[in-house]
Image (cartoon, rainbow over all chains, first blue to last red; front, top):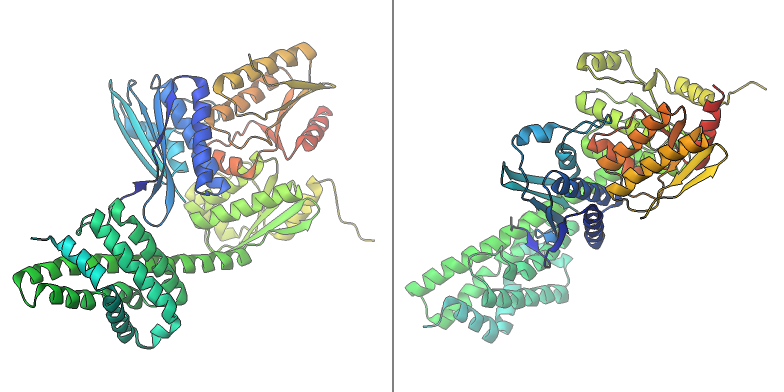
Length: 138
Length: 284
Length: 119
């Protein structure tokens, strides 16, 4: 199976303030529309983008997001990578298990975001930073 | 000494017409009757494009790796071919024949250019055959996917027929679910129901599971998700058709139905729905 | 400073969220609503999100918090018009907002508040 290729240069969005989270959502929406993702899939992707961008800002102390269109030979997709140089996540398994409860529980929303995308990869080192890459295929 | 790439490009350029003719002959021989499904002109066009793309790809990229960017135009072209073959009902072998029947003609022409039976030729043919094999396998993969997509789409269409959203009354929708609820199906069913709720502005949706044979944890979760999403939108779900065995299963599974209203029959659910809307049926 | 306008209709407050909110704007809305409920002695709040094509966990929690705060102030909040795709996604995220009243649209929301007011 051929490795995914990128159609164009990835969009990079710095995440240093609240408004940047909105910007990331907008970029994610633009890319989804470019490949004609369904409304539901677009909503899921944009929501995941919002969660992960916010995480990078709040938990990671700021960072950046890279969004790009990819193609694996038979279908198109949107890939987003979120990078921060924050405290990192000590127990990734735990973080993935924590979901949000309506009572406003703590938790990084990672588990929830994972359910919204097709592929989810996370690398985090305490004291160094976190890198999360997610993909939504058409 | 010219590389294999150079020699190949030379053959493709100089002997194109004869190469094309030989290839078409070989393909027709392999396909037999099936060849009739594609017009001569169309087939010729496809072969010409293949040769063109092959030349471009080997000039720019490697002869060993067909997965890189240089081979993308070729992969996209072959994807198109395989898809259409798949849709036309060709078998995987017949689809792969498009590429594989090219081996003999290219070998013949290369031999003519290089001189028969040299070690160089044997090495060259090994490399070319491997390349064509990869491309041939690629077409069978795509063919497979296309068939699967077709089957799935037909399945979806049957699904839509088996899960219609019915407007029982002004403000009351019913969704009789028949068969098992797997993840993908539930998604589609949920979407259809929610969209109908918005379109008809119906505050009540009855999910009838009389036709659902068993309820496992996953099915129960899907039902609960549907109920939750409906509520978020401002409508309400009533689940009807819960047989005694299903009720037991749900309890055993430890699934918490919470505040979800359940009724044994669709009729009971309908009566309840009317009551909630402040309506009732009276005999004239 | 940008804020989301809150309309007053009798003793009900109506908020129509039409912008892509950043977190601070959401927090500000919560604060403004709380102040206004107290100031106007409103009995109900209708939050119209029919124009929102995305609700993430932060906004979801804000909505739940507004509902709680409203209750403490002896009033009722109803969230109306959530889009199907948004509802499905929220549930997938794990948020079902159990403490929040919902209705199909603003009209149904007002009706719900009126009916509840007779309690």
